[in-house]
Image (cartoon, rainbow, N blue to C red; front, side, top):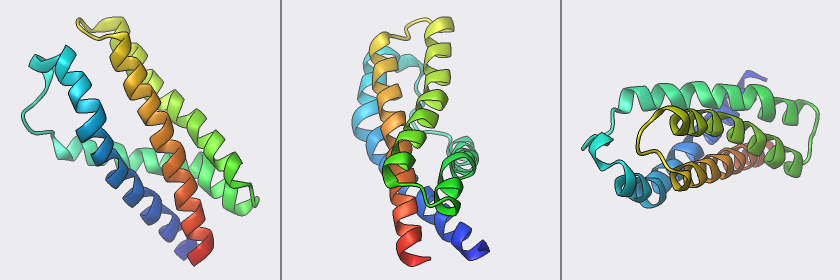
Length: 135
């Protein structure tokens, strides 16, 4: 069972990193550069980002992927439940930022919330698919 969880974590984590790199580069960064260019670093701080990814994937597995494997849930259940978790996670960040930060816009909220929701759902679903196929 431990090897199944290792496969699940590695697959989900890897997919999340690759997909988020693409999304951050081509979707999120241009929107944020348009509205809050002075707040953005020239280079991201990778340490805090990796800590977020590591923790977020553990939560995703705990609440979605492990129950999906142990209870043989459908991939549609995985996608929908992970999307809900993604909306909670990214929504917390985005709506709090909109509430307290100058220059934060509804466009930024909609873009990042949509991306985070789809990223979470896709990573979880593909991670479960890979684990079922391999493990």
